[in-house]
Image 1 (cartoon, helix red, strand yellow):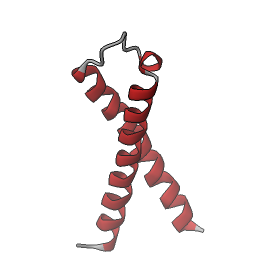
Image 2 (cartoon, one colour; image 1 turned 60 degrees about the vertical axis):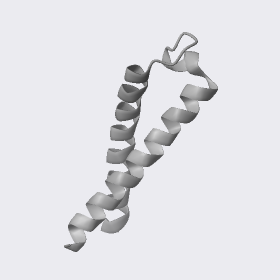
Image 3 (spheres, one colour; image 1 turned 180 degrees about the vertical axis):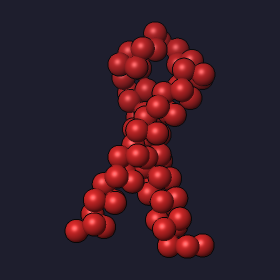
Image 4 (cartoon, one colour; image 1 turned 60 degrees about the horizontal axis):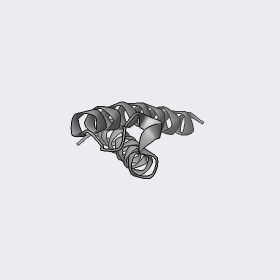
Length: 70
């Protein structure tokens, strides 16, 4: 696998994993912060994991790219 693809896949997946863990921690410790009214709805939680994961993935990739440029 070329180095660029490995770099992109590694940082996107690492960022997504960090975002997913962050969402799960927030959802289980403070469910009202994400709009859950007592019971956590699975579809809502999956959409929130996707939203946090995508944001963290792009942030992680962008930060890694800026670190490589220097």
